[in-house]
Amino acid sequence: MSKLTVDCLNDIFEYLDDPVTLYSCLFVNRLWCKISVRIYWNNIRNYYTLIICLPNESKEILYNKKIFAQPLTSKLPMFNYASFCKVLSIKKLYFAIGNLLYEQQELRENQFEFILFQDKFVNIALQEIYKLLMKTSSIRKLDFPYLPDQNVILFTSYIGARDCLKDLSELFCDSNVYSEFFYQLSQLCHNIQFFEITFREVTSSGLIDLISVQKNLKSLKLFLTHDCDCLTADIIESFTKNSSTVIMFHIYGYGGSRGENRTPLSFISNFINLQKLTFSYCDDKLFEGFNQLQNVTFPNLQQLKFKDCDLPRNELLLNFLMNNGKNLKQLHINKSNYSINIAIIKYCPNLRKLFTGLTNKELETLKMFLENFEHLEYIKICCEGYLSEKILLDVIFTFSPKNFHILKLCYSYNTRSVLQPNELESFFINWAKREPQKSLSLIIFNKKAYTFIEDDENKKIIDKYVKLGVIKFFVHYD
Image 1 (cartoon, rainbow, N blue to C red):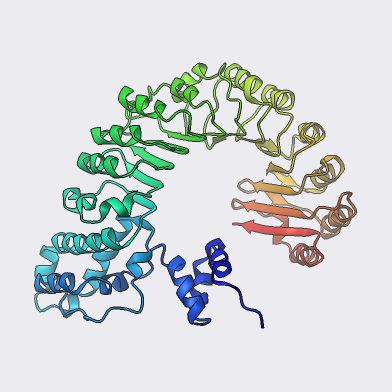
Image 2: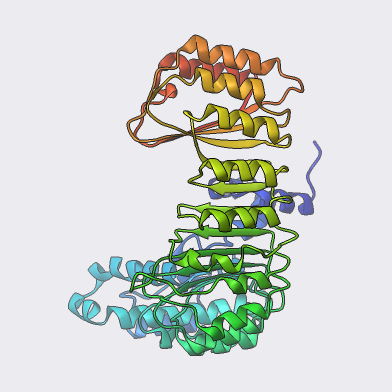
């Protein structure tokens, strides 16, 4: 029997994104275990095992300081699991170690002492873990939110931190994290590609230095909380130093504590190579700055999303689509109107994926979309009221372009479907005859509604056409 090479197995395991499947690979044979364990432990999988990986010197510290009620074994595990860690979540680690120590309190003679000094015990244990990780691992993804007593976990100053963090490519952090952490990280990490920042009332000065020294920033995601009324000029200037490399920008903005966010949007125009632009939970106050973008052209923009938020004023959005619609392949707008729909058809001829507020009651608009977007592959339709989807499905079959193959139906609250099994089957029979043949992916999003999939006969029909290959992919979200 032929055997897969080590490199081939490694590529396969790297591709797997399911921890359950990776875990099962550990038990196939010694070779599979040796290769898959490195990938499985990219994330810390067992926190007690991580403690066992500590050197004996650290274990003695934890026992002598009464952090563990019983001596830890001096025998090291089969693998140095800590060396495989590439993803580090400070918050998750903080609470996991706290829970681990709490579970041990029944073994203690003086449980009150543990309760009194629990935070101190957790921080001492974390210090020993960070020392180990800095010496043995290579962290690629770091999640560092604000936590109390941060000054005791500045692992960036530990031995080995430079080598451990030099290849850091993803950072998730709060703006008010202890400033010294950002200063030290700016000395070590210059190649962060994915940067996600949650802005709160305070922004540490060291954050500006960290942003400014990045050489290859690709994705920038900003969360403006209720406490953040405005991004400072210094922060905005630091973003512009990376303007030529950023290809994905996402701003998630609330109105600020006074009901208005005064952050200007003009700095986005500096991202001349932008490919993906997303606005989430942005209110009309923030979009007052959209007039600064309406006449800007992003020649590489392929995705534009307004997710769960208001839209800029009609004339501003129409001008933006006129300047940037030609290259768009994906457009996500929760709420639309006639003028916006006409503008989408006129200015965005190359769309492949379209998410709008289009409902099953706007069939003429749906026909217009399907007839005008010859490259369209995916459309989302909101279903509401008391309906049979037969007419809707007939429109999809009759007018959809040849590449169309993904249909998402989102049912609003209390919608009730009366689609009959013979009507559903007729649609699939017709779809199977389409030229060129392309299997359909069907996504049902049910928000406390009665969809056609609730009918047992319709379920059987779905299963039948999945087996026949007419349906490539079917999923029903409750």
